[in-house]
Length: 406
Ligand code: PMP
Image (cartoon, rainbow, N blue to C red; front, side, top):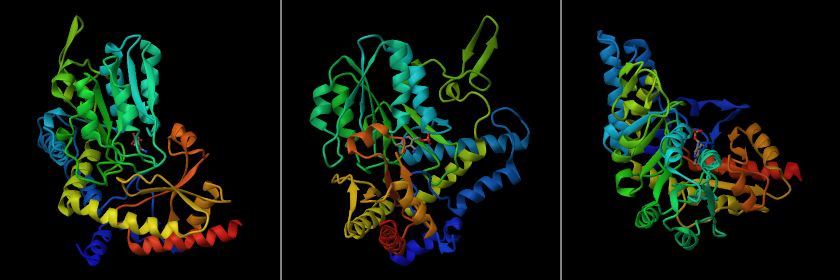
């Protein structure tokens, strides 16, 4: 695709044409949440204007239209990640998906002496639920470390695997370093030891084609709002036999077949895990998002972003006193950096005055910050809707702000 095609794609995102502090907005915070194309905004708007009703309940026309729209979205999202729709649970996001697996899969199964492996690059959402489960079951959490370039210590990971490990919870792509983990090879190895695997795909789905079935994991979770979809949306995929064997996490309407005070018969997967009224419009929007992304092509997006990443890395590396964290050979378009003499929050605040949105802080990854030996970083995360001009503006603004701070 030519630069002009990408400019046209950028124009699909209404918010990207606004100004911030009198400057054109340069949005580098997609890893936090992505911007939304008009197709997504229109799909949710159309749902509320034309089809709004609750799902799976009413026989009237709007009720069936809403149910059809919601189930069509499930099919589109399932196809996008290469899994059958009847194994895809729609959630409020990654955090909910991981907690569902923690309470419905891990809690009833783990006992004292079992081990849970997590990596040092996990988001808190893939650490804290396991700590809560470990406290209640007596299982032990072990941490797989990183190499200096921010890639996973695979030798250490494989050495830690044996049949006392019941679960490996790891991220597909680091939200701080951009490191892409070789999930397929890792899951193959885990399987040999009978280890169940949960992969956090929050930062992977937005950046590359992902065929979850081919990865060989047992659970895959992701969030919709980083994938051009609305907030409060997400997915949990699980192997059917695991999902069938798991008790429900949350009880209520829709997740039952029959309720009697003597006992309740639960619905089939995925309804068993979707108690109560779901985020219907949100998932209709997420369905529109994955159709939109498929229309561009995830392989095209990946190629574009890797070109922008290379360009941005080159431009930022030229800046005196700027240090980039995470130089793994397989890296998604996320650049964490620090500038000598400038606190990350001050830097981000001054960059905002230039119209530039970067995130500063610990990125919900305290253990990783400790590993990096810093209290905070700035993070510029790049999406296919960013341009070379955005990157030039970012580099120029960092140079300007650095001078101001010195
Ligand atoms: N995991 C990773 C790798 C993330 O980047 C995020 C979002 N920052 C989450 C989990 C949590 O996602 P959510 O807040 O949408 O549940």
